[in-house]
Amino acid sequence: MMRNIRLSEKVLLLGYSFILLFMIVQDFVPLGSLNDIEAIKQEKTTNELILVTLIGVIQIALFITLILLYAGKTYPLLIKIWLVIHPLCIFAGALMSWWIPYFTGIGAQEKVEGYTTMFGNTHAFLPMMNGIVPNTLHTIFHISLLFCILLSIYIFVTKTKVLSNINEDKVS
Image 1 (cartoon, helix red, strand yellow):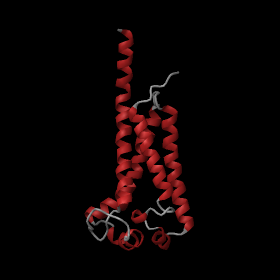
Image 2: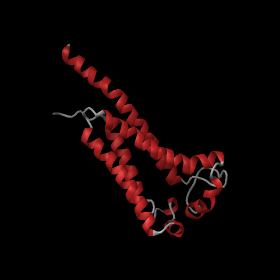
Image 3: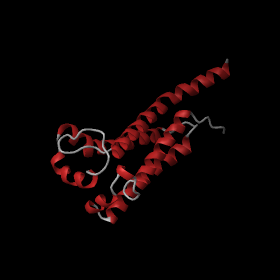
Image 4: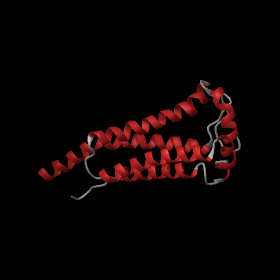
């Protein structure tokens, strides 16, 4: 069976590949002012960092695998649901960890000390609010994740329409 892999599916794979790379390097590879490896190690043990990294890598690798399996084909309903809801749950975690405390102050007090230690010397372009500021690296990650979620929804909503147009052209 010939696959007709859409540009949007290729971009989605690229987005999740970027997120996978982010997951692997963020806590272990020095990236100049984008991260502070030594500061992170003051707050988290090596075992904690490895565990969190493995959990993230496995999740993103699963997304990439599913997309590679079904790109250019019809995605089964459960795969569509999984590729939207699971990243939405990860994004909800990012909202609760970073953005809700940042914008509303809810839960910010508990995060100020740890975030200041781990991310206080990293680049941020947003102003400090409620004692914290999302650093640039995490902001890029969160935007990339949201982009992948929206792109997945686009792919799943438009896929049927594209296939039906191709079938109509064949009939004509």
